[in-house]
Image 1 (cartoon, rainbow over the protein chains, first blue to last red):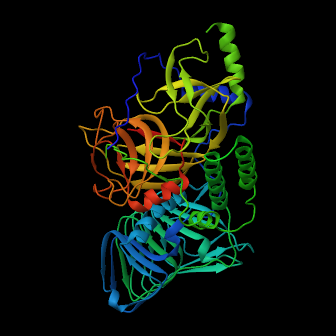
Image 2: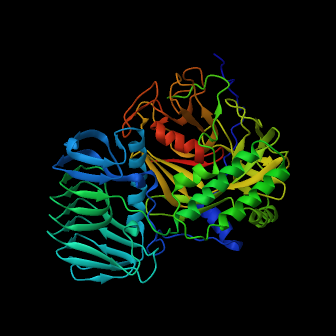
Length: 326
Length: 230
């Protein structure tokens, strides 16, 4: 086993480094610098990543009663128990608690955080029944309820995005419904729930629920969307759940992911060639980063797969024993 | 350095964007970080002058993989770069000549939140990924501070921490040597070492599930800044 030679530093110089305030002060003098307060642009697509292929995703198990149909993947992690799945028809893959589900749960955390941070927000009443809403970000500091019919009006834009933020629960009543008009699509409707969601019997629900804890679909619910629970369980009862697909795609995530690709390429190239080549790569990276103006919804996973071979990484084999602290 | 020199330094530093910060909801995440890839070994000095105290010779290639050395740049003059240095002591910086380096920029920033026992990955100041992690136990804590990724390592299936590791510039403040190595801190997998993400049981390294490690080595390359915070 090769020992790494310890490099002895005979002199300990006085450390000098730019503190954050000094750097900001220097940068602010002549460059475009924006200190972001944390709020993002209005109603952007929530990047689901690998969680997007799931119609049902739980953290602490899935329980089903009666004949339920799920179109989309199914999984639960870290609790991997699934009860009553014998009467579930899955038009997709039941990943249970495998690595795909684990990755989806990781991506779900990002999706939840992103949805919760979207803004600027419009405050909404505790009960959305009877309302017709335009695209935007709607926030309730406490619960969101729906005792009747809610209409989401896309205004003719198939990319219109609706984000609902509930500080605590989401509860829909029996026979309640969500109607989509003028181009609004379920694939662009998101419900970020600070605790648990409960869908009333024989109700019709549209959009992707991203709940911090549990999701319960009572008897006979039709869901044109997804039920994704971070930490809690998903409970089903003779329901129909279909993962939505968009007829047209959307924005926001594309910028991030395309830039991801280009930066990765620049780093890799710099490791192998001359300065000129590296500079060219950097230029290309810059250009590419500005390119994604097309309104095409591209998950981070899909972009990395398109731009890289599936096995492409920065990693190189260790030439000797690493000996990390572990 | 006299007043004139200091003013010149400040003006000339405008040639670089060392790092641009954004205050997000959860942490001060960098929007971007300037990097320098070394094409030859570089002497690092205490000040931007060859007459100042010499700190160390920074090799052009990393010891584990032979990857080119990429250092975060935190300041600059016309001929010198102020960079973070790999290895001990933790958080060390020095000045290297700009010649025979290639400049680039990364928009990635990895933040290890020890208290929450999680790793948050930012891109351009926005959260891209969060993963629960195993962090150092009280007797062998993960050292807090500002570091960077030295190299991305592909481990063998039987290696501790397989399948991949991000070897950091951080070193354990407790273990001067460990398992034949210099007490280097890494983000690595759980294979052959175990641990439940969300616990504090490691010897200082940050352990993550395999899916997260595979994602990290695709997106996070050498030079990416890593903040290990409370």
